[in-house]
Length: 68
Image (cartoon, rainbow, N blue to C red; front, side):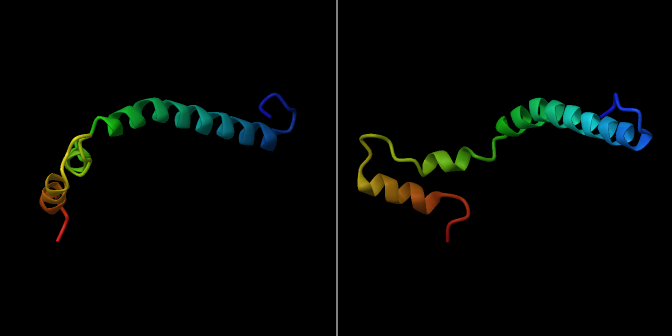
């Protein structure tokens, strides 16, 4: 669109290209930054170990944050 002769199409093409580039860059920056957050550590207590007993799983579930 940016190579066309009509000025409105050039504007739309430029905005579209810019938004796609910004979205791609933010994907490479924001996704890894969010993946490194430690907010998900509490969920590890809910995942039972392969040899975990039922009592251990129940205790982990009771101690999990946000559980009442």
